Every structure is written in structure tokens, then in C-alpha cells.
Amino acid sequence: MSSPGLNKEDPEAIRLVFQRLCQTGGSVRLAYGAFHGEFRLLAEAPDRVVVGLGDVERGQWQLKPGTRLTLGLSDRGLPFEAVVEFQGHGRFQGQEASHFAPPRLLRATEAHRLADYVPDRPVACSFADQQSNVKDGAVQAFGVDGLELSPPENVASLPQVLRLNATSTVEFRLAGNASLVMPVRVAYFGDRFWGMRFADTVDPQLLGRYRQWLQEARRAQAQQDLKGFEPGGAEARPQTRELSPAGPRVRLLSDRDPLILVLAEGEAFPARFTEAVGRKFGVAALDLVRGAVRPHLADLGGGPESGWGRVRLILVHHRVRSGSPLEACRRLVQEEQCPLPVLVAGTEEEADLKRNRAIAAGAVDHLVVEPFRVLAVIRALDDTLKLFN
Figure 1 (tube, rainbow, N blue to C red):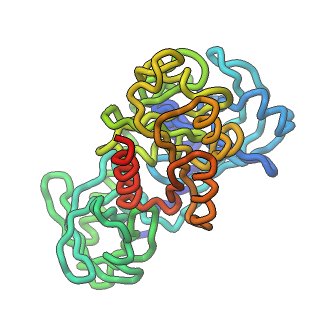
Figure 2 (figure 1 turned 60 degrees about the vertical axis):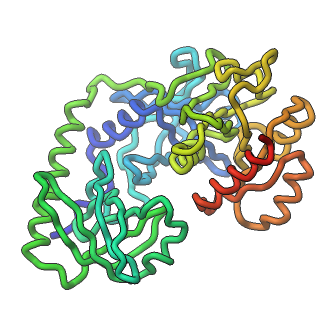
Figure 3 (figure 1 turned 135 degrees about the vertical axis):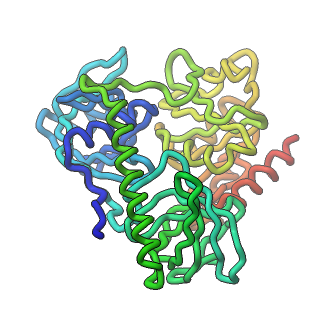
């Protein structure tokens, strides 16, 4: 049985992807020559896709009708890429926006992945590690010839649990409480998951039963998607509670204490950060274009008169909308006299040099988030907060 393929060529299937992004308040990535950025998807219609690319970027990029750009997006955890044509610009619900012709093809940029069916919720499973110890995990995607398995949260390094080409056994339940036990081997590593291909020793009858279930699950998901399809188009709805009535939006992604404010460009890093630490820390995100941070914190209990409210730590990502992260850190510490600890988050490359520069700019430390090691990040956040209690 061959894989159905991950590319999307059917116009309705492509529209459904954009409509799902609209419904979740998602964003797309646009690139043209040396320019690139992440922008909110505002609307989808039969003849256009509306993106929050404003007049400043449009002027800098020198976009004209007919200009072709590369568009990237993520749908159900799978990355896709397309070529779109700039049609024009205007305002959408009071916001500067750019219009693009719908793409004819969404090309899967990771076509090797065993992810023909991605359930709305991961499926709990158990698996054996390299020492044959039974571990709890979750199947996040199912393929014709294998599956993608994510480990428990306390696993810091995937290769230490299962190395490339290591064999294992995965047990999971299908609909109706039927249980399957499948022999697998590690075919590739992803971002916090293994790609597990079924071993040659798999029972043919068991494999046929699994593939029949997979076909039915894909069909059921497609039917459910079609029920929510809007032929006339869809408009973006906020994914999280919007806190600021005007200007840059502060988004409360995890409502708990202590609360960490993330300054970052776009929604990708704050969402990933929240997914990793949101069970322990509160997370709010601000994509600041210019100006001071504190005036945007009114609904977090802060603001010009009342201070920094519930926020207990500020994390400045190395991708910020205006200037550099070190400049943002200096403005916080020197101009706004921020009494809270500030961490500058970035890559592991030349970490010692980046730490020295971050401290010189007024930060407490440089936090490595690429690669994102969950336990190390949580430990660093805990240690920093304890120092300032």
C-alpha cells in the first residue's frame, strides 16, 4: 500500500488549510528576495488570501501586483510551502493588509514524514526504550508505513532513549478499545519526536488491520473538515484572549503565576515556549513594533502608573520586531527602569559571548532556546525567579 502523499493540490483542500489557520488565529511566513517575516492570516476567500503585511513592509519589499512570493505555513504540525502572487493592498477590519492569489499547490517540505493522518489529539501509547524499559508516550501522527512518536516530557535527549535505527515496540489503542502492538525502528528524528517505521517482522494481518483503520480515520477526519468548510470564506478569530484594546496585542497564552512576558516577533516562538513550560509558568506574549513595553500591560495589572503588574520575568527573544534583542533589553533596563529580571533568549552558537553581551545590556543571563531543551529552560527560569523573590 502506497502513501497518499502529503502535498495538497485540490483547491478545496488548500482552502480548508487556510480556513483552519483563520479559525485558530494563525500566521504565515512570507519571503521575497532578502526579505522575510511572519504575519497574521486575516481572511480566506475563494479568490484571495488576506495577510497582515502592512504598508511599511510592503514598501520596503517593493511589492507590485504580480510579484511572486514564497509562503510558508504549518497545518496540523506539518510544514508546507507555496508560491503566491501579490494582488494589492488595503485595510481589513481597520488593519493594514495585503491580498494574495490562492496558491495552486501546498508542497509538504518534509515529505518523508510518516504523517498521513494527524489526529486532533495525540494517542496515548507505551513503547520500549533501548534498555527494553517500558515508557509512556504519545503517537502524534500515523503513516501508512509507520508513525511519529513523542516521548514523556522528562526526556531531554531523544537519542539517549532511542538512537537512529534502534528497534522498539509500540502499543496503542484504536477506536473501540482495540489494542495494536507494532514492532518499529527509528527512521528519523523530528522536533521532540521520533519517526518510527514498521519493522519487516510486523505481522501482515496486523499491518492490514492497522492500514484499514488508518484509511477510515483519514476519511472520517476529511468528512469532519468538510462540515466546517465555509464556501464564502473565513475571517480570522483570535486564538487567545486579547488584552490590549489598541496598539500591539498582549496575548495571555497561559494564565498562571509566576507570569513570564515574552517579547518576540510573531506567534511561533511564544506558542512553542508556552507548549513547553505553560504547565508550570504563566506566559504572556507581546510583539512590540516600537516604544515602551509597560504601557501595554494594563490588563495584566500593570501600566504607566501601576508598574509591571503580574509579570515576574521578561524574556526577550533574539527575533524581535524592532531593533535587536540587546537594544530591547537596554530600553527595558535603562529607559523604563524595569526592576524585573530580563533574559535574552537565542541560539547555542557562541553562547558565552552572547551571555557576556546580554549581561552588558542589563540582562541577567543568555538563555539557550535553539535547540530547545525543556528541562534546562525550566531550570534556568526557576533559578532566575528564585534570585529575585
